[in-house]
Image (cartoon, rainbow, N blue to C red; front, side):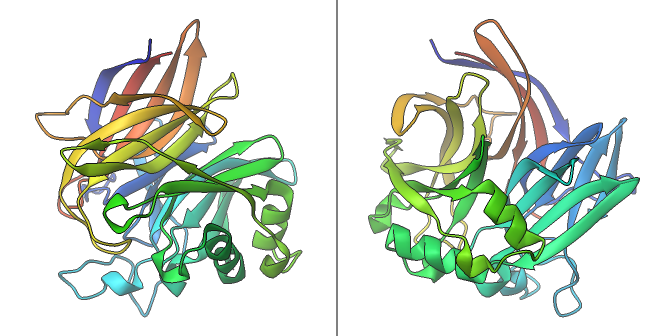
Length: 305
């Protein structure tokens, strides 16, 4: 039976004391973990008890952080997916924007060459192809999770049941995608395929929609999901519940509520596999509280399958 335990909770702050903002994805990098911030041009590298900044994108019109209060939210890169990948024999992390604005249609590939090395690519033609396949306007895309499986990357689009849009996914050839990111092929030549949709249910009348995905050793996939009351792919809204969903192919086997953390819904936006054992996996999860002044939480979860 699917069951989840929260083994530990940690508030994330950089070594200089600044909060890690809006944690939206996490993946292994070297001897640590790279955490994307969806409203900043840098990521957080958790390693050896430290939290280091890693620039993953150039400044946007001179800004490195973005917010509604500062009137810069429309500029934010919104990196929402982080996947472990390999480039030329080196392990790395591929960060992907969510779509919905041109600034959010970029990828950043981070590899280790003594220090982190970053390649940035504009993938707008690929995002347009994904939108066509899912029959959505590109400005309505909200690609929040991705999970590699062999030679394919399954890329998950967050839905909005209030607008009649289900959570969905497409498959992308991983080698072609990596070639597009490093400039070896035109992003327009990367063609998504196999559109699927997912019904994750609802809580208090608000639909649960996918926020991230992680592949399990047995080939199944765990999704994180949130019931967020928002009218579109751009604006935040109140989150009434969070959950994990176990998938086998396109079949939703089970949806399980996530426990509250410190009396509050934990809007998990990033999942990464730490290790596995008989009947269970251990995950690292990062939480986005939609509050730039509040440090994001990092959870260690044990999920019994």
